Image (cartoon, rainbow, N blue to C red; front, side, top):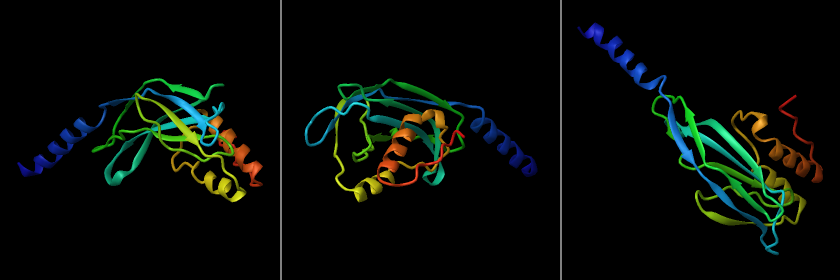
Amino acid sequence: MKAMAKPFFTAVLLILTTGCAITHVYGPYMGRVVDRETKEPLPGTVIFVRFYTVGIELMQHYVDAVETVSDSNGEFHIPRQRLFTTPIPFEHWDERGSFIIFKPGYEVQFYVPENKYTVIALRRLKTRKERIENLHGITFTDNIPYDKWPILFKYRNIESISVGLTPYDNPHN
C-alpha cells in the first residue's frame, strides 16, 4: 500500500500544479512626468513596466511587459493589464509592476502607483559621472523580448553615446 501512495500523491500534485493558469490584473497606471526643478512637462519620457510571478526563494519569472512614452504635456497612460501564466509550483504574482521611468539626461525612477494619477518629478543629472551611474538602473536580469522595450533600448543607447560609452548591442540582431 505504501509503495502506491508515493506515485499517487506525486500524480495528484502534478495535476494540481500543472496546466492551471493563474491570472492577475495590474493597473491602470497614469500620470504626468515633469522636470523636478522647473516643473515643466517632460514629453518623450519612456515608462516601462515588467510583470512577474515570484517563486521559492523570491525568484522572479518574467510574464509580460509594456512600454509607453509621455505625450507633449508629459502625460502617460498604461491601461489595465490582465495577465495569465502557467505557474511553477508555489509561485504567486508579484503584486506590483516593476517600473523604469527614463529620459536621457534625467535620473531613472522606478515606481508608479496603481489606479492613481501621479506626478513623477525627474531630476536632471548634471555630471557625466551621474549619467553613467544612472545607466546602471536600466539593466535586465531576465530575457525580456526586444519587441517589448524598443523605445527604452533606443533611449539607453542615446544616453550611452552622449556620455561617451559604447552603445549596447541590439538584441534583435
